[in-house]
Amino acid sequence: MGLRRNFLILIFFIFSFFIWQNWYLNKDTNLVKNENNNIINKDLDVFNYQNFIHVKTDVLDVFINKNNGDIEKVSLLKYNESLNSNKPFTLLKNFDYFTYIAHSGISFFDKNSLLFNSLLPSDNKSNNFNYLINAKDDKLQVPISWKSIDGNIIYNKIYVFKKGSYDISVEHHILNNSNKNLEFSIFGELKQSINLPKNSLDFKNKNLTISSFRGAAYSSDTNKYTKYKFDKIENNHNLNIITKSGWIAMLERYFVSAWIPDTSLINNFYTFKDNKDIAVIGYKSDKIILKSKKNYFSQSILWVGPEIQNIMSTISPYLDLTVDYGFLWFLSQPLFKVLSFLYSLLGNWGWSIIAITFIMKAIMYPLTKSQYVSMAKMRILQPKIDLIKSNFKNDQQRISKEIMDLYKREKLNPFSGCFPVIIQMPIFLALYYMLMSSIELRHAYFLFWIKDLSSQDPYFLLPVLMGITMFFIQKMSPSSVTDPLQKKIMNFMPVIFTVFFLWFPSGLVLYYITSNLVTIIQQKLIFKILNKNINLK
Image: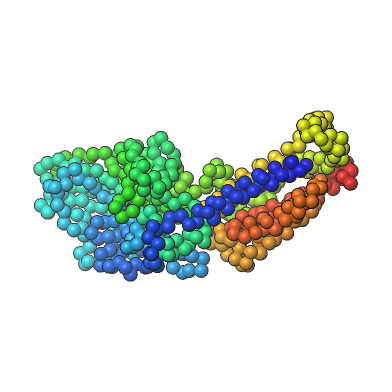
């Protein structure tokens, strides 16, 4: 009995420590190397508005650099910066101390012979660089043009924004009116500073939440989904693959930017670090030859927004895998689908978590019953085990052999009670990643003071309630522990885990409270049945 109990405690501590380590020990990563950096996050006021084309849809607020056509700032109008803020979350930005932009265009092989004028919005004669999607329109086009000095080569880049959408079509139109062939490639890059400023708002927000993966990722012909850490890029272990399908991306908790290249082209996916400690992941098409007096068209897609799995999966295969569910993604994904279905019925993520807990406990009821039956049998056998220990107290090897023979005669597996816990631990961890990484749970309201199921309980009431339910389970469970030290440890377990859960997301604590309450009910029912057949006293 004691061996099994110690095993269960060990398993739970291993999984719990893994979670704590992921949240706490990694929360100080991605510091700036300059400890004297005292910059506080600034707004777009550091920009010169005259250098930008402003585009606003119902979900995006975008600033495009007039000189190079890069997207240098994107705010997500449907997502606030923080729970109590009315300021929209800014994903892409370009400040002196932090860069995160989307760069794209064409790269000419004969660069010296091609000099282009500054770009201009090609249909904008009034110099009004503000675009606003109309209520009656489903999409908005923002055309930008470059023209060679001799006027023979024209490059039009057209951004196409769609109402209610975070995917932006980027069309590349090239007209070759010269007398020679034109050789070029289409490219797209995502550039982001490797280190977060220590005193920036982004870094402070990171410290208050779980440390999830922040870095690059890609999908190719041979790999559905692969993360690529900034550390590799910083140490010049760069990506360099050829593929026809796939995408490249920059990931962070809840949000992602991704380039999906034209699938009719063969592309090179690559990474590198520039001289400003900026990580770059990009794609570049194979050489395109445009004959004289001909034109060319290519289209890529830029996703810049929240990690909405069901939508991203329709944009490009496996793009939905960018939701960071950790190594138990194969459990987290189906759990999220079930949770989403329950939400469609209940309309509240908190009640959906409670409902999925009841479902999981119902599925595992046969194992739970087996666990308690095993515990009851172990309690009956305990006097015989004590007698064996007394008879062979000077021969530990003989004690082990006699106890194992006793188990065989009684057809009892001492570890059978461990199986339900072993199964529950991966589910517990999978739920943890799901609650932490699903954008749908960000700032999700439950009841009363629980206004964000993805963050900790601000008043720590849920963890305390969890500790109380754990205490009742412990008192209800039959125990054969006689060692005083072990008894003290067991008595302190609810307190230890209450402290442990103080910083866990309230949604996860809610799941555990519900699970404990169901366990208490199941224990009463099972032991009531067992008491009719087995004398536990």
